[in-house]
Image (cartoon, rainbow, N blue to C red; front, top):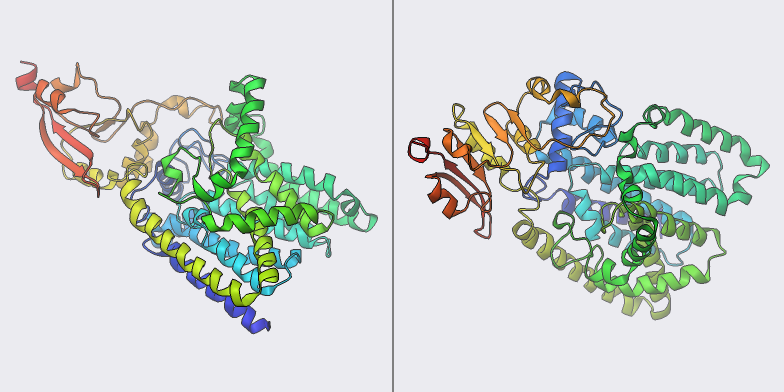
Length: 528
């Protein structure tokens, strides 16, 4: 295949993937998740005041909603909102661009691995990577996971090509180190990967001719990790370690074994996703298309039967290490934390496609894969662009923009917004109301401004402007002239009648379910 044709096919894949990643990006997901809002509002605060919402100047870790998230995605968002504004599209476009660039590096890596015999298999693997539900879902998020995934993939690519050109190990270490400033997963995954890499490929790495580049690579890591070293001994840096401290050793071991087998099981990957968080999932589809289970199983067989070859050994190294942070990080399956696993998973699927192509021949294989690709896209459209907005609206905090508009229309009215089922919803109101960060910084509870990197439990109530965000106090709130707002469980019809409340607002989702309702109190009647 000529270089021009190769470039053209890759450009077609990128163009098609780009269309999927950006299509109705501002509307789907049809809401703005609290993690997206926390990123957006803190970026806005940095732009306006050079401080985060807790009045911390240029933090190394952002407290956000108690997660102490690495800072790079937020700082990268600042120039985007400077020129393009604060719409959800802006923050999600960073992930969409990251996903597009990751396709290029996936293509380059699988080509350099030299484990596929057919060029056609290379493009089919790249295409299925680009249109995988796993990548598409993460390409349309307004927070850090996809950017971290991209930087990790770039680093992996350079580490691999260093087998032939050792100087590229320096670039590999730089990008891998940089990825630790984007997401928690990479902060654990990168040292784990390096440890196994040095053990498995020690004969190559410690060759006399490579020692100079190895020393320079470690120097790059040390220099780029200085900010992390500054907060290494703080509780904030280890905030994601609750799994190892809150369970006894027996529970940890049992959970790790169960989760490992769950993550790699064909049922989880191709049929029924085990992640119970509705915000992480797409209706009626898993992270990969179900027909790809066949090349996956074939690929696993080829991987282990050719393990002595460098390319196969490198893929197995990724296969093992990329899941370790997800397995250790919580008691439940989190498919977002496992995103790095998409890289070895799709390479293994590519191995299976390659053998099928080789054994059956292109006359049968080509039309089958074209038909299955079309089937995959139809399935994707139905699941993501039709069912997802309807069935996942509540999980994606649909309605807070509309609620904020309602609040904005009544600046002289006091509001109580119930947060019983969504304790972090205050950040959505701050974002959609464009509340000035300089004012909110003065209203934040002072204890969160002292010893910033001390991991404190999040607040349960918030007050800013004419809004209180907390649980409704049924003894006191009906006796104060204000509007009480929440979901259907916050205020039942019986409670409204009992407390003489008057409905003034109602918002429904696409399935005609009540998302929000607002009731005006009547203290003259209730508390006379």
